[in-house]
Image 1: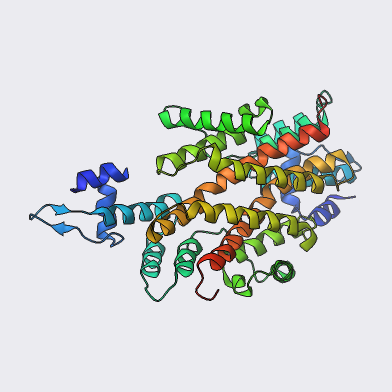
Image 2: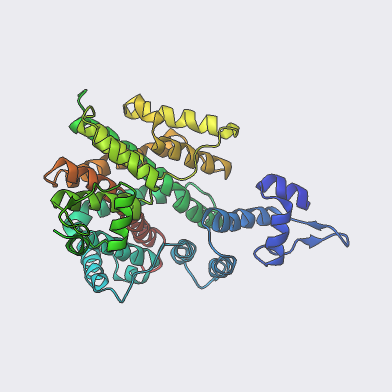
Length: 212
Length: 212
C-alpha cells in the first residue's frame, strides 16, 4: 500500500508517519519510484505499536526505539519481550532514596511480594519503584499502609492480571500481543480507576446513603 | 496550639498554612495577641483534608473551597459528603461529544451499569465521563471494549470498593472519613496500578516464561 493508505488504515496522519520513518521507529518501505514507496501489513502492525508506545504510553522516542530493539531480540522469550515493552511505560516519580521513609516502604513492598510468593526479580522493575513511592506517600501523610492493608489489593491485582493476560491471548500473533500489552496496560488504567470510583460510590451509598 | 506547632504536627510549612488561611480554606484561629493566634484540633483535621485535596488530589483552590462547603452542608448525608469530596478529584479529559465514537462508548458504559445493577445516578458523575473517554480511546485504536470485556474489571472494582470502604470505616469520625476518602482514593491509585503491572509480569512469566 502507499503512504496515504497506510495513514488511512492506521489513523496516523502522514506527517507523523514520515517523522516515525525519519526517526527509524518504522522500517523504510520498498521504494517503487523516486518519490514513492510501498508499505506492507508489517508496517501497519509496527505503526500501531509505535503509536501505542508514543501516543498512548507517552514514551519518549529514544525509549520507544529501545523497546523496538528489545522486542526484535531473538534471544528473548515472549515473556521478556512483553516485559520489555511494558517496563518502558512511565511509572511516575522514582522513590526518593534520601528519604528514610523510602527504606521502610521498600521493606514493606519486599515483604508483600514474599507473602504473595511473587518472584523476587520483580523488585528491580519500575512498577516496584512506583509501589515504593506510593507507600512512602501514604506513610508521610500518616495513613497506615502495611502488608495487611496491601494484601487485599494485591490479591485483586492477581485476578486483574489473569483477565489482562486472557485479553492478550485473544490476539493471534506474538507481535500483536506485544502491541496489545502496551496499549491495554495503559488504556485499561483509566477504565479500572473510573470503575473503582463508581463502585466506591455505589458501596458508599449502600453503607451510608439515607435512601437505603 | 500556635502556628509553628500546627505546622509541625501537620507537616505543612507555615507559609502554606498562611496561604490557606488567606484563601479561607482554613477558618481563622482564636486571636490571642495582635500577631498571634491559637489553633485547635479541628484546624489540624481541616488542614489534613485541605492538603489531601490540593497536594495529593491536585484539586484547584476554588474547587477545594466548594468541596469544603459541601462537606459542611448539614442537609447532606454522609454518603453525599463523601461523594462531594471524591467527585471533586480530577478525572482526566472529558468525553469529546463531537466524536461519534463517544455516543457508542456512552451506550456501552450505560449498558454495563445496568448489567451490574448500579444506580443510574452514577451516569452524571465525573468518573463515568472518565470511563466513557477510556472506552472511546480503546475503540479508536481498534481494541474491542464491549460489556463482556468490561464486566470482569467492574466485578474487580466492586471488590476493591468493599476493601476501600472497610479501610475508610477504620477512621473514627466522619470528618476523618471524608478526609481519608479523598486521600486514599488518590493515594491507592498508584498502589493499584503498580500491583497490577507486577501481577501481569508474574502471570506473563507463568504463561510465557522459558524458565517455567
